[in-house]
Image (tube, rainbow over all chains, first blue to last red; front, side, top):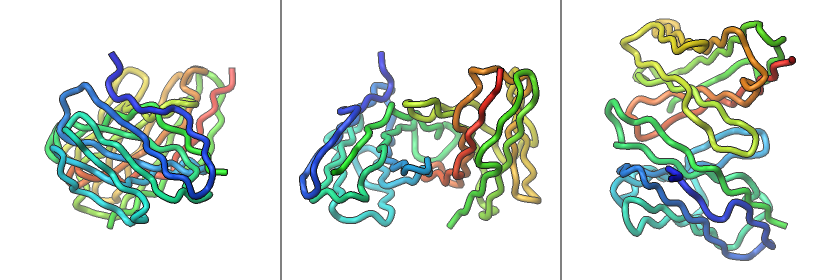
Length: 115
Length: 111
């Protein structure tokens, strides 16, 4: 009955590799997000999708490519991983983008370590 | 864009005491201010939120106050318990599409 789930929970990989993180929400929400949390716990939004359409794309290297096959899924693919990509990546969802019901629900996070 | 500052970065209180965390924001168009609690190894969880048409909101031991003129809002936790120990984040939003998070406050409640 997990609301927002992410896989994998932990990811350890070598520099230069390509990896993907998957996110699924079963809340019936229209909007999904990817956040990066660095070692100092700072949370920064990377992408936001509303009904499979990209609505927010912060200044993120184009090695990061989100994909939303349907509104319940938002995956994050990372090419040519770098040491600085090591962080915790959180997926989140909200009922609608904007308006009074925009509370975001976060997944458990994916801890990425690039060696 | 919006800039949210949060203080203090760390806070230790004795069990039973109150804890206060303060945030300021820069964009006067921001109208939604949630607070999230992040326990070790978990994602942030919403604990309380407030909208710009309200000055204060309370939910049991947790309260949030908002001063739109001064552009600051605060989280108050009374009668703290060890299970309140976590990292707390404030955030500000003006459209709901994008949240700007504060830098977090690591709260430790000492039994």
